[in-house]
Length: 199
Image (cartoon, rainbow, N blue to C red; front, side):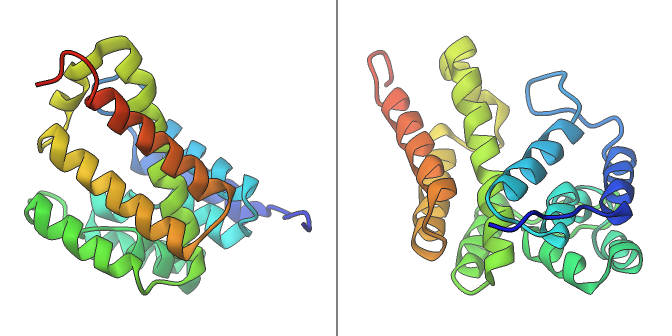
């Protein structure tokens, strides 16, 4: 595997992501949201990603959470069409600031269908994103147990359904260590949810 040289574009993207997500924290925690984008970028690089993919990983939630199409246009201007395409493809909705997202099920069904046709760069960033999220759920489950599901807009069963489907599609389309770990992590969440004391 060849070494990926990160340029000043990556430095700029890191600063940009820090500013875009300033004030945001992870669900149910006081962890700055940018910690998630950094972790996703690290996973992308650890699994063979190139600089554009690593930059897109840093910015993968920027348009979905912070400005929709206007944010995408800014990303395209700063970091290029390839990065903008990956960020767009990793977003399940693109509301303008102050607008509400579409309903959860509609967004997730559309995203799952989208994963069946997107290119490998999008699959890599998406897999890294979903793995980091699943890892965080599993880690916090050990601390708060079933209360973890109260952090989500939908039920435990719906959340697990979504992670299972994402994992199945990504494992099929991007086989390798990254998606194997995702599948293992989601399977562990399923086991915990089906354990003693769960109604």
